[in-house]
Picture: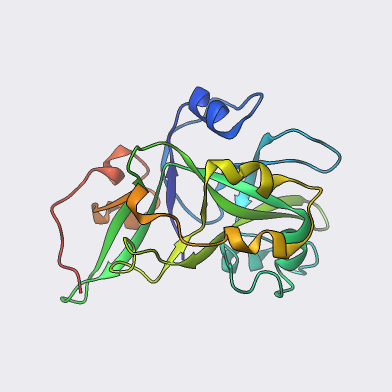
Length: 228
């Protein structure tokens, strides 16, 4: 799964990388947690340009009776999103990119303790998770929310965790966001582990376990902890 990530690239970097006309000047985030309101990139209905919008992390399906379901919908498994009622419509019509610079995974060492790892691209450029979004309307509020799609871990991540978020190659952004394509079969080949040779993973402090700790100390490398 993917339960924490960071986004600290500059406004100019995000505009260039994601092909945006504009993006807000954002506070650097090093420990984004579920239910946070975070930026995503999408093409809204009846539009043809990529825009930056702020959505809640934890997808609330439009048909949900209780918005609390979003806490259980931070991730969507690539293998089942085309069939699951919570995700299948969004997979057809409401795909998005979730910009990130790093994500975290935890592994259990031989001592039984959990150790966090930071994972990013070797060139430390920002990247886009494959995501889905939806719009939920309650009696007195409207919430737009998103989920991050996950898949099997690549060779780099396997010793740490058995799942990883789907990272889309930059060359596939346009295809993923294209609102005119609504056939799930066209996107399934994209939902695969990212090239492990283009990534790196390193141990970080357990400070990242607490979302209140949201600063650059979260990504400082530590000595290698024991792996299973």
